[in-house]
Image 1 (cartoon, rainbow, N blue to C red):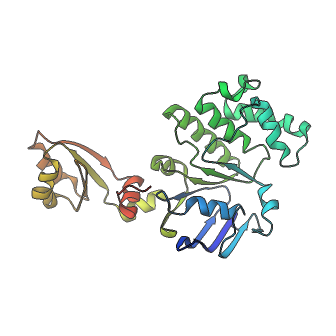
Image 2 (image 1 turned 90 degrees about the horizontal axis):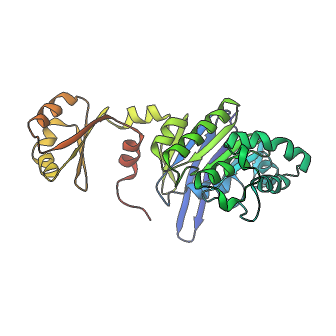
Image 3 (image 1 turned 120 degrees about the horizontal axis):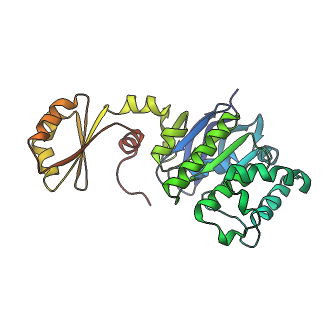
Length: 303
């Protein structure tokens, strides 16, 4: 039985239908990624799943509870990591955990019993008495994740949990999320880092303009939508070369600024053609989830 089920969700603001018939199903003990450009409907979907806003139509069940009618009961078993850290700057690390735990009706004794494990999870054992202003960005993000676990939730909603972090901090959080999955937690993740989604997620739903445009495991999506080899070609002459010769050696070509992306099932002829053009720089790599995302949602900027 799925832990979270959403069926034909719709939400409109004025003339704009932000979520348009979305279906979602999260299996127990898995990480499910919800991906899409800015404005695709991800945050609105999360708020509907949490019962913070009411859908215009559709059905939601979280942990066998109907939402929004029993959303409060459901939220007692959910952990949430928002896009922006909302830690109380006037409190210490421990005081932030204590205060947050009280929202779930936990006694101070019960919260204090859990705090050492939460600090260990966040790598903040020696920062229990530190004030929030003294923490680095990575520390604050790890504390926000640990705070979301204070109620020992069954489901964790992560809204872009590693935005703004350096690679070291990002990898620490990834390790923590894998530990949670190994403990049987279920995670719903939104992220703009395709590498993050590819590494962590068992299944992905890609949405745009409120519609699901693709769904499946990262590997299945890559093999279904993208040729296996990608050549990124740089240089002042890259675009002109691509228009004159590239199409003869690649299955598909995309232009992005001064970079030419050549997608191919047989890289040999393309590599041979490039060897005779020392003025062109190139990177040969396997296809990845970012290629899928850009093919399905486009390369234009979204505000």
